[in-house]
Image 1: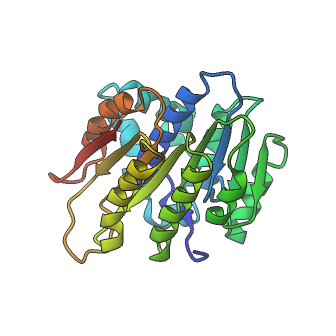
Image 2: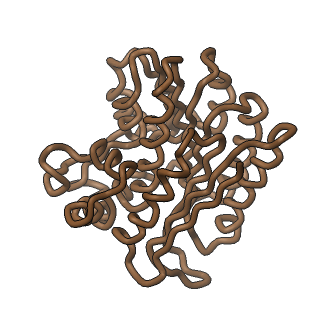
Length: 288
């Protein structure tokens, strides 16, 4: 949706969960020498100012990455969370942070010379800075296009190894159905790819139904289905009809080895660090 700007939400609790999972996937997948393709269907601007502009209006990052960093100063984080904090916070610490890296920047820092990035962003105001950020990176292809449609042409990669992040705004109800259809087509074209689909925890019927629909899609993939996990982090309670996001989750198809183990340690830690009330919780469902 062209009215949506991720800068308002940069570094919030949803970014913490999303990027903790992303870093864990990248660490596991780059252990093999075979080249890896990273695809970001909704790449955004690539990097976000925190103390001015969109992010400064609501300071959502203060309840996300900054709060987590402060919590980690008192209670050592599990390895998956420590990797995330090292990826997004510079040597000056969270209090000195001026910018928060988006998923393209995080992925680019973890990927190797033989790896490639395909970054899709439809919003012209975000495509400009994203394109400029990667203008000197020969590994990256930045496309001003809808990522749901672009994903079809990116798969399968010649190396037969890919990590795909699907992260739409879900401001349009149609995004829920498009996410399902995009994953169904991607699994048909490239059944062994790793696909991480982020979703919000909202009091909307389509939002509540999406995680189960995605896990059902994994069960239907191929003759035996695909392995999958659903990692969920709730930071507060919510009431029927409420509009705000109470947390988020990711469904990961074909999760890398030991990702579930890492998230099983990380999720309760994140719930303690980022929870706003007694209803803060976490859940991890796996399908082998």
